[in-house]
Length: 227
Length: 362
Image (cartoon, rainbow over all chains, first blue to last red; front, side, top):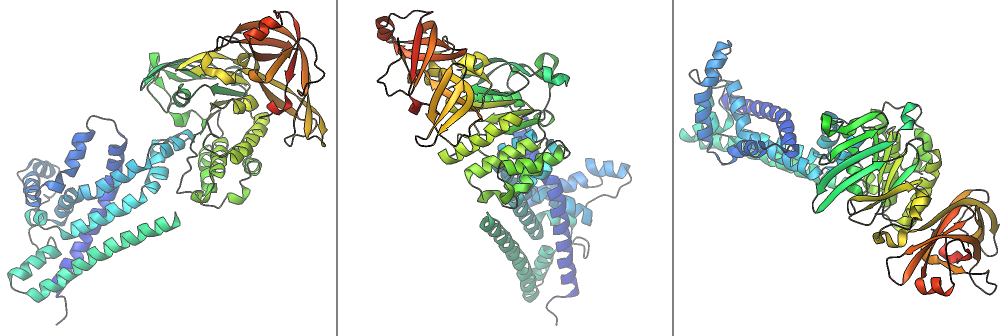
């Protein structure tokens, strides 16, 4: 018997695909958001920062439940999407991506926000005086200087998406090849008393998390050594 | 160029913490204007407001024919559209770029203009050997040199230097001051140079704006402004003459040079000047002794015939300031009231100003 069954491999592949998609999208979305949070003096800054941080303290099942209500065929967003001729999101891969993005948002935005804050205003003022406009300053000064924060955010976002359970259960169900991620699969194995398979899959996730953290720390120390 | 007829004009008022600033500058379109004053006078705040880095000030800023800020008409041009060359007090280089990457940041954005002599500036500031270095391996003086050339390469219309030498050690400071002096002669655009060091100001500036407690207390040509008798006591040691002349002789044995200026000749310590070059020299008001007649047995090397123009009270009640005319150059002497009366001095008198050579040369 091979270590991993076909279904287990499918779940593993799906999980990696989900985590990668979510991480890439979150970086694209989270970097401008974190940048705005670090630069703005708007009075909306604190409420929006609080909303972004909400998934840190909110039980995943609560988040999943609200999303299900909102995105479902009778929810506001669901009906809007139906009116636009789009398929509803719950119990699809896309639905999982949306839910995971919300759930992992603070894990990407907060390291980025801290990194942008740590740059201070001086390098940006220097860039402005040298003729760089706002977007130019973001791309050619803020992002490169905040690179450690980008890496940390990506790793945390990825690892966090790989490990989620409650949100997936609520919004994704447990459809093989579509929404059945590794954490669901482990739960199924344990329920069925298949501890050996549960062990193998759990070890896989443990390894992914460990390698991700180790890689970040090595990358950081290399930057430090050069500096 | 029509722009050349107008310099920088700024009339701004704002509060910065405990300091209320209310300034009104009208600066010439050429040369170096020093923004001089004691610490906490608001010099850096003024420079940042001119650059548009602080938006707190209300009023109007124009440069040439461009309106940079006009709150009455809701006009505010952001710093990146003002074509500035700003050098900060702390050399702030981009840590993620090499020296060359830093230098080219503004140069590239200015469109690599052909009239900006990139190679010449790199050589003049001694950066050729550093181009590939990471900026965190540079010394303080090297970093500030990179910051200056980076600003010059961005093809600025106005240079703003905020105490660029104050964070450096003595050797680096004197080296950079030399670079700036040589830059002065070839500078095509105006510069505002913030400093609280009168020797730097005396060597570099053509014009002077004196700032105290957030207000402009005097502005005008350097020599005329520094020898005014009505300057506030906060400026203390800064008042005094700056004379401009040409090196006419070098005594290798005594290590002295001879400086010819409109009022005569002065001996001063040799500091690698060459005969024929133009030179500025500051004569502090404390370093002048007045005598009715030339004195034979004195150690003061320099004795200059002058005419007394005016006398005014100094900050201490025992002292007074005497304004002297030495063949067109204005000198200022700080003496005691007792001496003024003992010598029976009055405006219009002929007098000899004795200057110790060791007190001269920054």
